Image: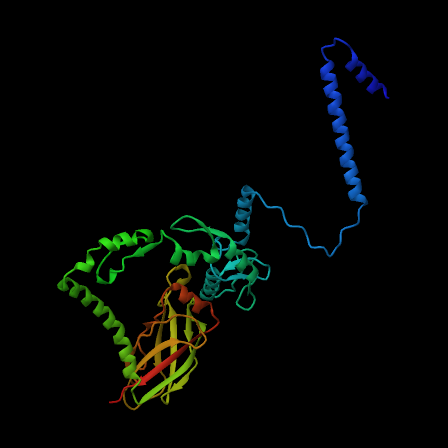
Length: 376
């Protein structure tokens, strides 16, 4: 027995000593601690002496991250996966430059449209490398990762994956804003979906008199008549004897002014045995359209052939067969002659500035032109 153990035993055996109980407890605790350390060392030794792990063995499951750390991870992912232009998470397609910097589809198209208006090469706002539809590609992994990140429903304030949020807000959320089913007869009520049954049971519009309903139905008939008038006009034009159509390609050019302006022009094409050209301009030749948030395109049809008598025509532009831009058809009329061979500039009926940016970002604008010759 060592001298330390002899001293401990001697202290423990001293009769009448007030620290006798404490000495025995300390010895017992020390013995247990030593035994525990020995057991641990023995276990570690067994592990070290055991067989080496199989490299083909599947990896062990990850330890679950605590909720606090999980929230921080989501915040870090938001900062990593956000668009470098608007600093927001992409809602649809995600594009990346050659150095891997991410851009949402809206910002990517806007950058290309701005570069076209300023006659500059579009560059990544982060590293200034060149970007274009040929140089950049979509990042499907980021699109999938973003779709799985949680986001908050604007109505019920609950968290849902971004991929299922739209369906939840349209079909499942009990707090989504909805309208009364009697809206068609004038009910203006709007409210959360869970209050809809109570409102409809008390709604006064189903009990309206016939006279009151006739006024509402009259307004509905006027709106329907405006929509049908366009289609009836197109159907009547399709009955004309001379009808021609062709695919047209607007190509970008610059004016010769001191401050050049962007305009578009098609190569000459032949329809109804006549030679034509289409021209287009941005924001009616505004000086700096790249500084404007609202962007529009307008076009004119020009007759290049010489004619012996006036040529009365109706024409309209529609989207090309391979484009996804939304164009609402509008019919225009003009009487062409040698003295009046150009129409006025008329707006291209696209829905908004986003659609205009899509056209400006493209290398060329491809549309389909229809010309109907009015018989005298």
